[in-house]
Image (cartoon, rainbow, N blue to C red; front, top):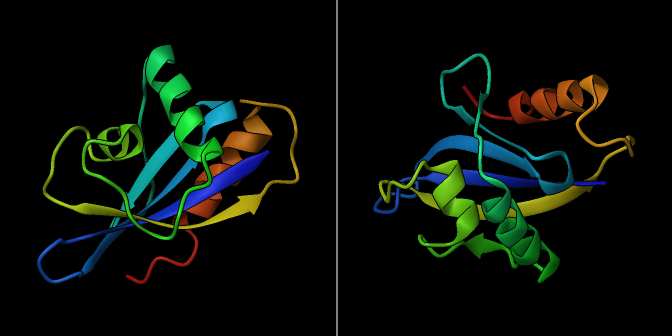
Length: 116
């Protein structure tokens, strides 16, 4: 199983305002806004998750995503105030989707390494 990591930045100044983690098989997406202490989970319908799975399986390229991509729409709740940039993918040591252990691991990853 793989987690995908994104930064969220202001489009005009490129200032970092948040970080996001996405794991489609677990139906997990969260955003940690700068200054927040815990990630905000994002929920989506099954059809959106299927679209997101197609996007990540198409080999994401480093850099900004289109504002109308399913990933950006989910992470930003449909707003175009920020830019979502793909950073990397990370293998997860858990194979069981949506288990409590996996969700805790993903929440911890969402909080990791975001400068306050």
